Image (cartoon, rainbow, N blue to C red):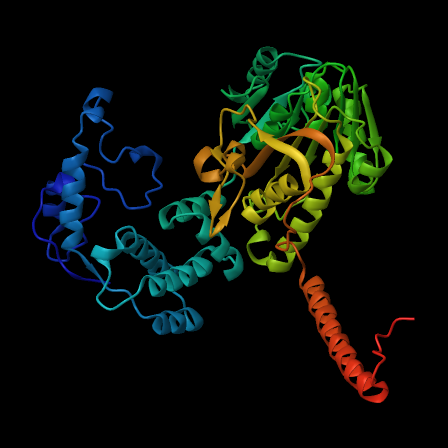
Length: 510
């Protein structure tokens, strides 16, 4: 794919950029690069994360001349010509007999070109053409449908997108949450280590442990500590919504979509089994898991319900101090656990999820009382990374109810989008937190915290038409057409009435 060799350059600086050359013998290549590890644009080798700086101390790395390095890379990149097939040739190759090794190499080449498009593109080829080829190669290599891959491409840069896709191919670390109603993290860690389980603390959590290694004879779901309710197997990302909710002893809390109970039991532990937690789930089969976990973990301050979360606004309006809504979603943040998401999610699925999430969030806001100086909060979270299920849902709630975004208090996570593909969201949307698998080695998650300022809907000065469905738009157009026809008929009636009577005007009114 590369038809032009670069000029001779110092091997230390060229190892990341110089193309392979058949004229260089193995002995010469080993002599040139001896002691200097080779890396690629998307090197996954954990032993070479610093690209050749592993023998330097921190002062040497900090003193590295970035300007000189950037200038060199620009010079070296200018000497490299990468030829990419046309979109027709790529489509033919992928349809007949795709070579995954060739597809992977082309992905890296296009990412390299797009990172400095004006200087590295082939003459006469557009950015959209490169992106189309890039999209087709990614869908083939990572087995996604084009709809979802296009959504992801809109969210990430080309290099970060590949990092995200690669992270989804690897399982997340196993994490457990200590049940502080029965033990402390230090004691639990010591007990597990005595059984040969290698664990480490999660720095940003007071109750989390990450399992580094487990002997084959030990099953984490069958240890004496697990059966005694001292811990729960739970993804690290699931700690975040409860940490943002920050419940206090004696409060009334609603977990609107609670099954299988990880977040509800976490809330109960923080509240020290005081106050009241209403743990609800719409699926009767999943409620059984709630009951089992509550008994094992020693939860005594909870009421388990089985109904649609949207009815709480009518049955218990303003009854709760805090509400957690971990809404049903497309699962685009947990693809490593459910690979079917890659090919099964389409525009209808995302639209259906988004509609349900909006209804649940409005119901949650209506079910919490307004802020009284201590509480009156709603935390919204999903295990999706798509904007349609996160920022757009929050922005909708901000326009429909008297609430505002407040800081989540979380130490990790990237800020939410304020601008996205022409959409401008609330200026405080950056207070939301986004967690990505490739950035934190955790399941993808979104967390937002809302404070309720007052009851009732927010009165909009200008009627919002952006949320109008296609059917509503058709009905509106039909009504306008009927109104125009009636006006035309009325005008004709006026003319005929004047002509017949000479005096009386027929208006159609009695």
